[in-house]
View (tube, rainbow, N blue to C red):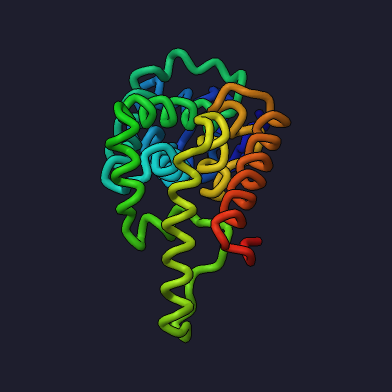
Length: 216
């Protein structure tokens, strides 16, 4: 990983005087956190908070559960800092922990799907479905049609095989590259790309059979 250095803050002894944390790479922050620098780990949390939350949200479908899983992921990552070897980026390593924490919280599919079906508008927006939301100027008929489409979409996502479903939910968050998703789900990036494409193809076909002919 490329090292980010603020030359004016370094000295020949190797010690750092007044180093501005935003100038430091993740790898350097990890090293400082291992040495007991809580501010360094706090910066890592700030840098990756959104990505970790969205990974948890993709797995759980609930903002409250995602918040809890994200907090657990950061605690676990701090406790396991000594196991980070740099084979992948710190972000990828952290997202893998977050995903596992979220999956561990997803103890029962029935509980998860109940929360997904009753998703709030905020949760729905956070999951970024690939069709456009209803505009403020939509007619009551258009609003009702879009609500029916969303309900049907939730049902069809639920019916997907778990590997297709999890890849799709991660992709919908818009936060991760295929390589990062592959690391999280322990599959090659090309496989993840196929799973996302296949999930979307399957859902589109099923929705069209339900009569939603204009699904993109």
